[in-house]
Length: 279
Image: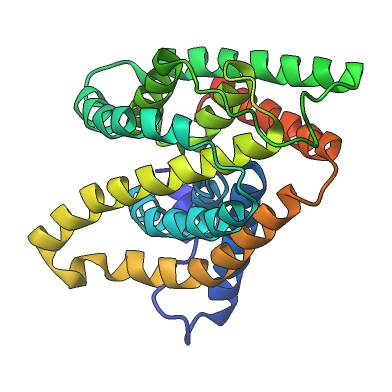
């Protein structure tokens, strides 16, 4: 960690540090809104934001963000289930592979060069951004206002999606939704709204598993006191994150599809740049 980061405050009490707690709460709202709106999970906004606000370990931020991500995705999925836009065929094929991929990724993380994967992933995001920009320029959004196609996905594509979501989440520390959304758009050729709904559902289910694999070992080793910092940060994040997740999911079904797709292109460009530049 940068030595200058040690001058940043560490949240130790909501009562004694209300300003810092309020900033973290607003960060939770921003993370929840982005996660619900684009189906990519809130961790991409929350974890970098916490590193700016506090000098605690990034591992603390990751553990704190996991249950928050579950709640963000959960509040989003509640809305999507009411609209019937979740593509369960993709979920059924991708989920088992995602769970297996997370175990594989955790084993590979110690020796595989993650920088190469970051660059490859950045290329994939950039290619998806180009495709989305081309569709916007041509004014075509397949089936934008129609129900999602009932056809089953190609099993190989769904299994590959699940596996890569699990592996990349463990290796790069990114939410699986950031891969699921462009994958479902570019390879699955799903409309934007069903893509966000399906990605949010996958993120919810995989986040529950990821939370258990990280939190349970810590509870066994250190007991509840070992998660005091993470619990405090999560408590500040949760209210705004849940509200933002539901609001974002609501906007998915109300915003014009072209504006939603344009916002997604911007997110893709930012994330691709992050992959190319590195951490």
